[in-house]
View 1: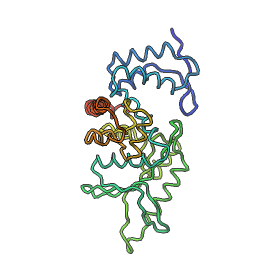
View 2: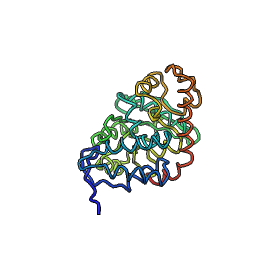
View 3: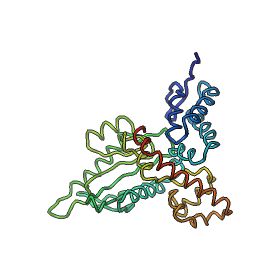
View 4: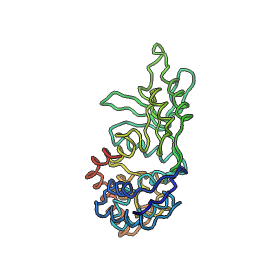
Length: 291
């Protein structure tokens, strides 16, 4: 029987390489069962002790990209969020775009008066049908191994407590809900505290059934950095011009004019974008259940 090697995860911890887990992640991205098994077997035969999860991901992405670019784009979504940096503003704009797609009216970087001091919130949203107002603090990380921790949850709780403590005799409280959002994960301490203290969290894998990945899949809203047909410099240029999501260029391909691409390249990008969005529509139910 083959002895599976120990690999190093993004946060520095180690674990036994699990081919079945790799195959499952490929299938969740839209790869067929046979393609996922073939890629997982290829990687299993080449992975060595001490390999990093990043190396394994890169190899899997390369093999999957040969199968179909839209599927590879979906597989790379967590990395695509990391590419929105180096500042947090593009991530704020992306989350705003996601919430608008879900029916919210959104403002970014809005000042809200608390009981004691004013607070600049990264994200402020209202839902006309639900009559709900929420504010969010967004924590963006470039490092996939970096987790939003307890001290951040404590800080955010104190800010929202000041906003919630408004005097109703003087003015109406400006929000009903406070949210802490990250593009990576939360530490177990942060989750334990948030669940106890009533802080809402939204991250890559939290909560279990309605996390950031699941909501992106359900709304069919993905960062422009997910497209495998774009070079890194082209992604940066689009972000600098305010193009943050894949569905934007599907609705208006003139947004690609800043790249001065040939008609063939434009067609290639639109085809990958359409494929990604259509793939999401076909597979989002399974992803929501399995992430």
